[in-house]
Image 1 (cartoon, rainbow, N blue to C red):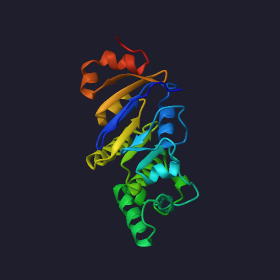
Image 2 (cartoon, one colour):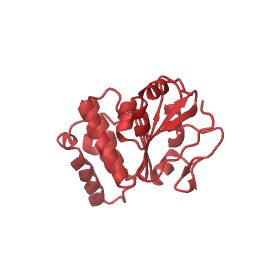
Image 3 (cartoon, one colour):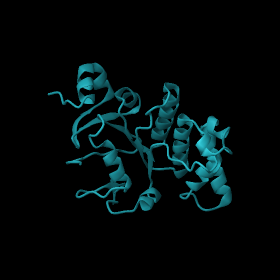
Image 4 (cartoon, rainbow, N blue to C red):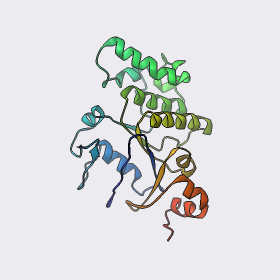
Length: 223
């Protein structure tokens, strides 16, 4: 359950939503993405009320969602990317250009472009999910705990991509359990407890008060 959630992510800004398991982080992402309907309130995307819009319509308006490492395992890496090129005008050459552009960002994926997605490692599958996002060219990117279970060197590369997207004006809401990961990329960190945002801090504020960060991560709101 979520209660009184009020948050804004501006163009070019990365906001991290932190907190322990079970506080409502993934529920919020699913609601923003259109997978769950809210009982009340509104979801606004670039001035448009999208609260009752379908998942597909939200994607066409510029919202892209990364939840887990979802892929069509029997399809090649390249065909997975082609499946997500629906925002691109359905012209074969333009789709091919968009796919090649996404692969160019991830050399490891490019080397496996003709392999089934089921043969990829966890880090490579996460790269594939983000490569799909590049093709869709979103204005708002929602990412649900993409660093979970990945090697630090892989996480570092993915975070660099988020920074590049932010520099291009993409608004990003990052759901992340690791406050250290969140602080390395986010402009602001919001902390969720019992379905409610209980605190908001910048990375510099949290670095200056490690005890505060620790209490917030554990779900205890410091006075």
